Length: 257
Image (cartoon, rainbow, N blue to C red; front, top):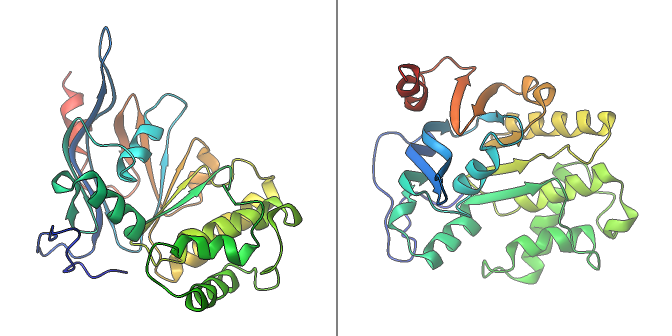
């Protein structure tokens, strides 16, 4: 993981005592113009600590995909502030934001998004292409992380020679290879059968036990129930948090409406 003291395109992260906070949203709003305007994310306050395994769960149209895009820095809030690994993203230019995303956030998608002409180890190594790391070192790190997810025997296999579960493991390895501060998994079991889904959930638990910070965005309540912390979103607001921490401000504010 990159040190919090490292500057990103000239912007230094704030120095504070909340060193365990890897993701923080403060009154974040994402509004889309229209008649009337639509608030897909509405005054959300959220904190995720280093080493947590969290499910953000909600039905279709709840705002979870918009929230994923925001916390993944693929979109910017209409208002509010978003901190990733101590960095206030509102201070960053688009290029600096892309640099932060590349260095500190790993992504896992339902569709895997593997390159068909590349082997498993080459697909994982692609996650390090813009890090200034030699080809030999990229392959070494990719081999290590594939072994970590149980695919040491599939290094040279192309995606079409892998099962769905194996392809998702390659995708998880690619997300992990750069040692990100946080991994965002968007419906990671959505294309898998129940047995394989259970295996992927078990893998996430093992990675979590090893110290990885993972946020799973899903509509699957059963999947969410198998993770240590569940956060429910509906109509753009955080409804509940299983940790019983301080309630999100968006819920407190909405209670009197």
